[in-house]
Amino acid sequence: MRRAGEAGAAGVVFGPGRPEPTAQALHAAAEECGTAVLFRTAWCTWAQLVGILRAGLASAGVPPVPATSGVRLGDLDSLADAVAALVGGSVTIEDTESRVLAYSSTEENVDEMRRLTILGRRVPPWRVAAMREAGFFQALWGADDVLHRPAHGQDPERLVGAVRAGGEALGSIWVAAVAGRPLSPNASETLRAASRAAAAHLLHHRTHSSDSRLVEDAARALLEDRGSVEVLAERASLPPREPCAVLAVGTGSGRHGDDDPSGLYGLLALHCAALGHRVVVVPAGGRLLVLLGGLERDPGRAGGQVSRLGESLAEQLSVTLGTSVKVGLGDVVPGLARAPESRRSAEQTLQALIAAAGPRAVARSEDVADTVGILQVVGALREVALPPRTSVHRLRAFDADHNGSCLMETLRAYLDHFGDVAAASRTLGVHANSLRYRLRRITQVSGLDLDSPDARLLAQLQLRLDKDADGTRP
Image (cartoon, rainbow, N blue to C red; front, side, top):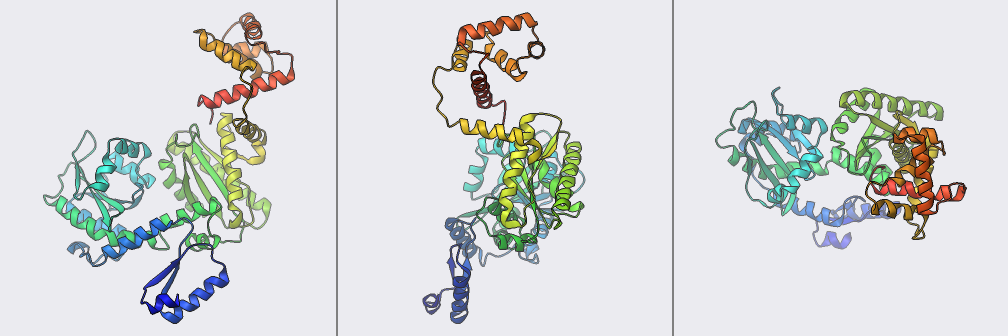
């Protein structure tokens, strides 16, 4: 630090994980030599940090668009309103992951895509996937000019400009025509200048402590057991040493990436805030994690708070979205440092709820412990190399070689119903005598001894593994 100060360096950045005495010594040295000392957070890589610094240097001194010169640095909502007034359309400012950072005050007559994007605070994943497949993002981040998307059906005319500085992509500004009115004649030129001037605003927004993205990143790092409790507590205004819990919220199949959480994101945060809870909502694949802090000290009352919030979320969101929303309640833990434990129990519980495919929408881990257990057993067995010629292997090969054969399906129904021929035949939609005939064929083809508990157990586990591999279970 002292050598850096003598050389006239503006600042020195250290990696994360420094012991407190070392950090204090570095701060003292920095005060002596007049050089700033910074500590990189766990979720920001060196490459990302260098990119931000390079972008900051490049954006310094870029002249603002006259109409935006009075916008306070980092005030993206005012920036969006100023650009909207210049171009004669509605404006959305997004980051590089298509998350909405700000949007202009809008008229009532907005197109459906803008409504969905603003509601979910991000572009719907299916739209992002379509644009990526069409090569749109490659063109956006590689272009030096504003891109134009003509009106199509109910989608109005759109312009989009990438916000870059020092070779670093920071985000984009989208402009959409409103109520059929054309954009201003010089809209493209205005957007081009606004995109250059917006770099400083996006950098300030990205690095400001109140930025929701930084809060989300800090919470994600903590839930993955690699972040700082102090950093998250400061940025999210969560008490670090009071009881907390994680809720896992999902819809549909629950398989990673299958569901679209964009409609849930804004609704979750809004609903929790309306109930007076301090939360951070973190997207995680096809589900959302809700970190709930500041719970009651008494374990029973804290558990009641978590249960009531879960029930309220499941009921209200299911009605709003028109689809079944399930909520896994994580264990209440004494402080943010143990939030990863609560996350694991919440996600296991949600997975069990979805796997059971029943009417139950909210549960704690102890409520679905048996289902969680079998999912863990099946997950562990995926790594086990079974003998190549088990009864189920032979049965699967027979079905594959004989078109229309359904002996695997028959065996699964029979075992799922504990050998109850009448119940299994009803599930399959066949006569009980037909089922008995199939069971004899199963024994003849595969050699499976249905009277052996060990054979039945192995067969049922293999059938479950096959069902998982087919994608019919999460």
